[in-house]
Image (cartoon, rainbow, N blue to C red; front, side):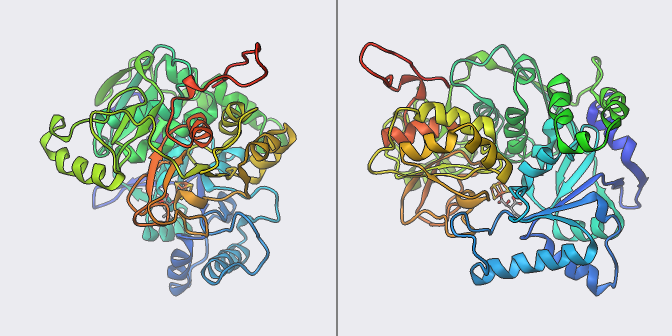
Length: 480
Ligand SMILES: CC(C)[C@H](C(=O)O)[C@@H](O)C(=O)O
Ligand code: SF4
């Protein structure tokens, strides 16, 4: 099964033993923790009077509950309690915690790669479903549950069942305005939210190789929304260039050269044996938008929302319910669907290149009067870098609120929430009913430039068609 793949090689390199229940016990190379899912696991460890086995392989951050506006402590009750619990657990165990005073705080799936700790050929776990993001570097990265967090804290290992590997080949060059987010929304539309069950997704092909690391992270991030256990891209020069510039490799001279042969060795072989192969024509993709309440209910911006009766039978009722919730009409495109809120953020799309793309759309334009727009950088480092190159100014001048890093309106565990049946053009990864804090709220997933375009137009619109900015006669156009 899946011989010669990166998945196979990294799995084998980390296997301690096969357990009586058939699962493999794997060494964990990096354990990321955040404030929502770790407290219970630490309590379970304390009940057994056990210590954290490998604090040096564990890194904490705070992201889900932190306020993105006023960060004066104490936070609101529940947030403050979670924050204190993480602070105490980290301090007692000797775990590094990237809290807001460090300048390195951010969403867990943004900070690991930034620190240079997300590396090819590593096993990475976190009590968070979007841990798949780290697969962008050719790591095996899995979201885990509370009892597994406890086990990893206690032993530095995790028990897991091996999955099959589906290679997804995205051919050709992506068109203007088409990004990694559109690739993954296109893949999920085609294979479904449960199409990946039992699989890990390996992404390859010309379109994937051309993606920068931020794009690869957006892509792998949503593997889980396609039902896959994880997703990854084989490491290459793009990966190594990112790693080489991180603090970790700058602070550890010789490490980069020492590890590189291992990274090369775990790449999938040219004749690797996959359990399944799917080919996607990258040239045929367009900017995607969702019309429903799961990430598979998406459509190209110029394509009509499907008639439920045209869908496979098991998807029809869900489509009808989703269209009723969203108030969308089948047969029409999503263009012109009114938008109340624009949210640029989340571990899918809040890295520097995402902000740059959105800012290039906003430059010289203004957020529509009826839209509340916020940009929430993925980390303090992203924020600082964006400020240094003037992006904050562009966002603020256009009418966006510039916030402090965190998960924010991606899941609305802090004050950043939709109100009533507001519609949100969102760069995040989940459009489930109630996801953004209001049960009547409506989420339309899209890429960052499309969020910026929706903010300007006050409705879902094709960023490629925005009228040019500038003085009459000059046609700077839009760089997407
Ligand atoms: C809070 C956490 C457990 C959750 C996850 O696992 O994904 C969150 O990050 C999300 O995106 O819904
Ligand atoms: S940004 Fe959203 S998807 Fe990512 S970890 Fe936070 S809540 Fe989960």
